[in-house]
Image (tube, rainbow, N blue to C red; front, top):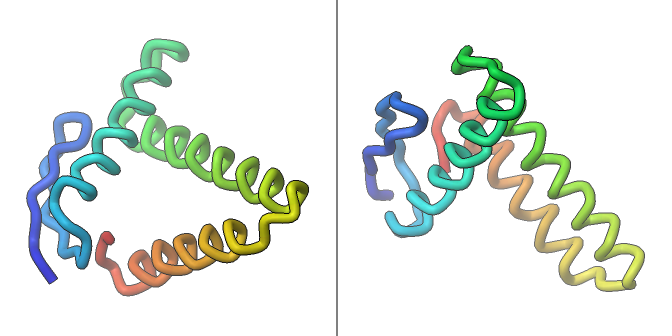
Length: 98
């Protein structure tokens, strides 16, 4: 596993990941973008509040996509999404990020 440095909303993180750096940076950029959108929309400046709210929007997107996959009878996509969520949960349990 490689170790990368990420900067999310002004905070520096070192994480280990089996994914390539560009993919990890892309995920970090998405999270930071959501945090900035929410900061503008709500006026909040609290980092952790914005982080939780941004994470909730990502989970909401996941649930909507899962529902669409099941509705469209696309079990292979639903299965892949469940696998991705499992990896995320496992990473968090092990106190490391993807």
